[in-house]
Each structure stands twice: as structure tokens, then as C-alpha cells.
Length: 262
Image 1 (tube, one colour):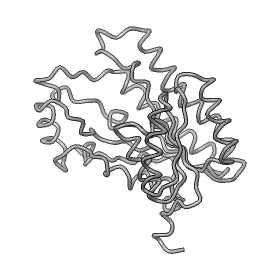
Image 2: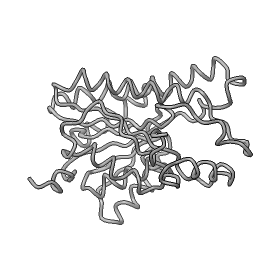
Image 3: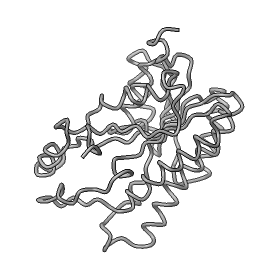
């Protein structure tokens, strides 16, 4: 098998939670589809996922939209049961979903309820979806889990970036993203000998029409000199999903333009 063949995902079934979203999710879904995978996206909006899948199918890819809520255990169970019943297996699980309403306010203005929701929704939801799909991967002796963390799971946010704006970085975000990285290491160590790999992708700041002062501060600080764009994360996701990374597990791949080098 040639090296380019090892990047192929032909015949693989991939689930991307929040995979029809406007940021990382849709880019990752597109990348996996372009590499040959059958891609299923799932989030709370079934309509959005079906529309996105139709868009990918119009480009000649195999894509499907399903529905689930990261914070609802019954919903996650239904997603698992429906997906396995319909497709028979899962080879790639990309955990990109985030409970956005659980991340509001800075430390003085957050509440124990906000922290509870963040922990239950993001960390609890991540635990549950992995718990459900890992036995299927173990049974088939193969699978790749890719958890989408962040630079803020590795380093703290720089308050000077937000000067001149009303932007706030909630501390709950750092909390759940850091926990995701170490949970990934746990999965890698526990299931590696059973054929299941687990890795993280930690993206840097994603361009989303932020206020000009923030954009200037960010691009001045990051070594590559710009924010992350849609295509930047595709290759990293395909790499970790494919046989090209068959001897890599427990890693946290930074897709950050060199941010954590400083």
C-alpha cells in the first residue's frame, strides 16, 4: 500500500457530531467525505444535518444527516442504536459537539449551575457517546476516535487579545477542553490493545468575523499571522482518521498556527 493510499477512508463509516456546523464540524465532515468516507453528521437540528448531507451528496460524496443532543443521554443512545442498525459499524468518531449555552460569562459572573451544565453536557456527553460506540469498535478490532479540543485546553487564554472588545472567554471552556485531552489519553491507553485509537485535535482561533481589535491582536501574536480557516483542519482530521496515523494514539495534535510555541 502506497503512502497516499493510507490516507484513503474508502469503505469507512464516520460520525461527526456537530458535523454540519459553520465552524470546525462542517470542514471536518467535508474532509472525511473527500477522503472517501461515508459521513454521518448529527446535532440537535435534523433539518440542518439533512441539508448539509444533501449538499455533500450533490458533490458526489456519501453523506447522511441524523439528530442527537449531546446533553441528552437518551438521545445519544438513540443515535448509537440507529446508526449501528443502519450502517452496521462505526470506524471514525469525531466529537466536535459543544453545549454552547453552558459557556457564558466570565468567572465573577458564572454560577455553579453554569459549571454543572458545562460538566454534564460536554464532559458527560463526551463520556457517554464514547462509552456507547467503543464496544462496537472493539468488536470489529478497529476504530479511530478524534476529540476536538482547543488551544485553550492546553494554555490559558490571553486577556490582552480581547482589549477593545466586549468578548469574554468563559473559564468553563478551558475546563472542559483540558479535561477532554486527558480523557482522550485514558481511552488511548485503555483500548489501544483492542484496536481502538483515540487522539485530540486542538485548533487555534477560528476566523468568524470577530471585532477588528481582536483580529489584529490575534494575528499579531500567532506565528503564522492569521486565524484558522475552514480548509486548515481537514488534513489533520483525515490523517488521524486514516491508516496514515495507525501508530499514533493518545496524541494532541495542535492545529494552531504555532500559537503554543510562544
